[in-house]
Image (cartoon, rainbow, N blue to C red; front, side, top):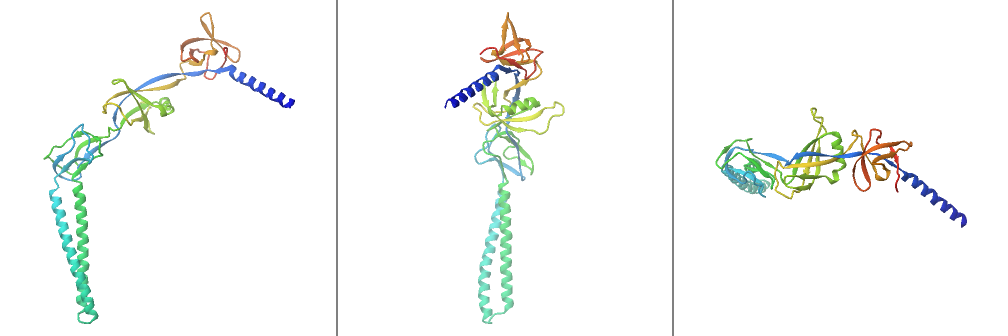
Length: 329
């Protein structure tokens, strides 16, 4: 039992001495500087509103700045002639189904007569041919009706409900042609902010992706954001990469062109500014010193206090990763 106690005390002593050694030295880290990047909001997506058929505009359901109604309709063209053609196809279908009903009865009746040998087989064959022809014509008219119904749907130009109309180039009574652009709608239920970033800025953005926030200085609002797209290409002139941020909910009036600011914290590797714990700073006669692990004392310039534990310093003799003695407990 005594031996176990001895080893236990010895282990605790060794562990405590190792922790003291680990805590005796601190590492110089590069200073972090905040970079503000300005962007402007725009619709998360846009789509042109194009007519698939030619015709006269009858109704326009949304003007510029108004949302597309829940029906999804932006405008409708005159479809009177299509409705007439659909009714004509329906009448032809009804007529052919009447013929089918008649010829089916006649075929069944002549089959019995042929079995009794009181009717010629050629008459039965002729009736079966007419029955198949009636079925074929009914199928053709059914396809024509479906095509006309689809054409009727295309007399209305649709867009996703809730999207805002940003452009309108038609008026009721105006004639439009197939393929003509009648307006434009955008998804302002979500906002997109395109930015161009350098590689260090992009790395900082990815590091802070879980807590991204955009500040709108004109209205004093801070809104959370997400990374929407990162382009795999880059601009050969600026050597920057296109990144799109997305805002899913906005507390104020939604529109494009609102100025916003993104602040990224980037490690400064070139300015010879570093951060170290306050406990490593030695002050003598209003001068500040650090004692490096090799024993050399280095004079530094104290720039500012970052928080209760770390300070910013400047020195040309320090490199990132240098270790210094912790002087204060």
